[in-house]
Length: 408
Image 1 (cartoon, rainbow, N blue to C red):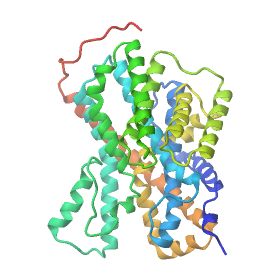
Image 2: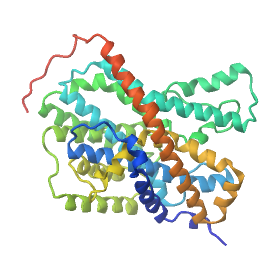
Image 3: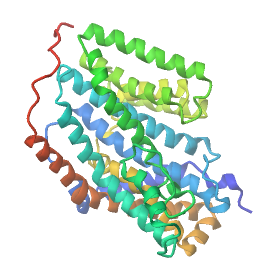
Image 4: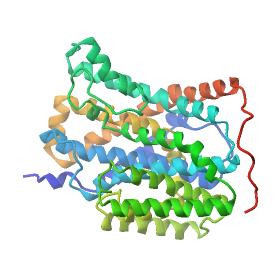
């Protein structure tokens, strides 16, 4: 008899990752490559990191699906490894956002063109997001036998929040219970991304001279950790203080980076340290949303922005391709998993044994990277280009903040 815990071995996550790297390394996936541009090695490591973060969230949801298929409960898997993967993936995504945009404020002397910045974010997020919502709507209607289960007004009331690009709370569409499970609930993180973007003009006042930035970052990060530790409920992913602290960690790394205070050990030493820190996290932390987990992830991220490549893994062309399509992998994974498991023969096959379950996850992952590559080439990248064209048409603002001293 197969026990429930037998469905959560660790090795499938590594085996599937290796297979996907081989797959995306093939010539047909070259269309996912970003246009050639000189990029420092440390930014290449971030590009490669994104791909593995999106896969971590995928494996997290793949583990959730076993119990979801058996008793309909969408809850964390009993495996600590798979329970941590999703939270760790999203946590580091938030750090990357904080790092990139705080670094941009510093580089542009607190004077970015805010209208153009927000136009760029809109055209970056919206195309793939709306594609995901279209797929969600199709799945809902398929499972409703293409019949309206509610009034047209109620239907639009349920659909409208989904069109807000993740900023609003979601509701069920067409009376379909737990609609968000069809998309694996991935859209929740965009709410916090938007809040971060909207807070940037206020935070820009703190992006002053080097000494001021360091002081502000130390106080902000320490305050965040204090609020998290005293809150006592940080294991609950609904902690706003916790998510704010993750952005602050990324911002702190950007501050250190712009000061030239990045780690400089050889890649082998830095990679070994990062692996040991991740092993410690898996052993010591039951949730990715604890102060200790954030500290360990923050140190790992600091090593990556310093150029740590995890023994060359993050700078592989295949890894960077995964990074280029990572937004599509993240946003579309729930739809692919729901579509696969909606098929009754596939569902029965997956429930027979652990290796069959993870074989289905492998098939879903392969389909996902193909779909995400296509979406990146024909939807996401044209959307980004359209955003740049629109931004160029906008008048440049002259009422920017005064240039701060470059001292420090």
